[in-house]
Image 1 (cartoon, rainbow, N blue to C red):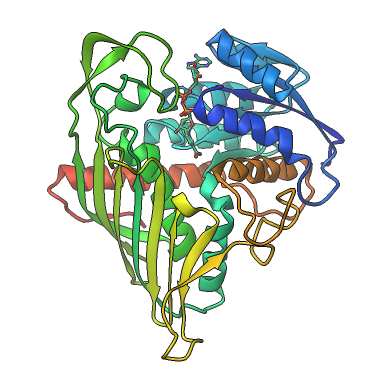
Image 2 (cartoon, protein in one colour):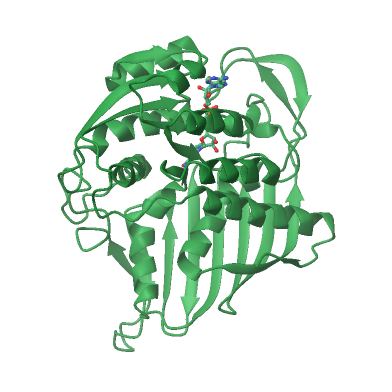
Length: 393
Ligand SMILES: NC(=O)c1ccc[n+]([C@@H]2O[C@H](COP(=O)([O-])OP(=O)(O)OC[C@H]3O[C@@H](n4cnc5c(N)ncnc54)[C@H](O)[C@@H]3O)[C@@H](O)[C@H]2O)c1
């Protein structure tokens, strides 16, 4: 049922929370008219400075330090949950049970049992949108490659090599945070590998088998922060250290339903690479590659060039590609976009879905979030059994 006014809130004003907070602010300015008024109501964070600062900067009506106030507010319809993963289930469940639409960050939860419970709650509220934030599904470049695959321009899929390499864990004196706590699989695999395997399925279709799982922790302990540790930022640290509980590096091999194969690695100790989600993919008639460090382009090779000039070529993203026309204020070829813009596209799609308007692809649902966790769990189980094959059909 279309609603003329939607009140939004974001719980968690850390690194990704701010991207959601900014996304809602811009979402109503993009794509087709008809969404109606988007009221920027509340930013919630246990840290009062974070909540107030973000509310002030981005023009939200109020800041809250207790997330229950957002759950109970009558003027809020839709909420992004951008909290440490261990909090997702409790907060999401309370929101759905109080009639709020939810966009929950990935990974959906720390365990499959938590995620199953969240799916069950969502199913009890079919009138509410319960979505998971696999942000890269709104990447214009990744969607452009997907379109070429779907149109058959790369032929039969053969091989996918995916990575998500970050350097936020390189410094052994970087502060301990929630990212380094939790069991095997909750480290680099869940934090960034979740995006990588999701992008692989988005492009190459369902994975049916995972094998060769390997998890490694290379920085065994980290100092406790003296101040608030947000995102990947540095902060003063104490002399006291705590053990790192999860992996810095994860690698595995996958087989897709198409019969094609993929190799994958995710790490948070990739020196000099702050944020490199990338892939190379090869089909019978072409190939494509992408690196988030150059978000506004992809490399492409097909059979349309003469042998004398064939090979990879650089394609700059522009209005010919998904999400650009009216998605950006200046939608001219080569103007470029960044990861922050993807949050605008994602929050816009979420609001369109709630309002029953627009034409953006739907935001992934909770069943999708659970599926992603099952893939991560298969990597862990493979690693615990010497790299054995795990069926994920
Ligand atoms: N989609 C993406 O590209 C992307 C990128 C980064 C992070 N994420 C996801 O977003 C989530 C948050 O990650 P982050 O990097 O923003 O973390 P962060 O540590 O930077 O921020 C978390 C925030 O939650 C707040 N918080 C902690 N406990 C709270 C409580 N009880 N009540 C209210 N606020 C509380 C903290 O004060 C902090 O501001 C994670 O699930 C992560 O996986 C997604």
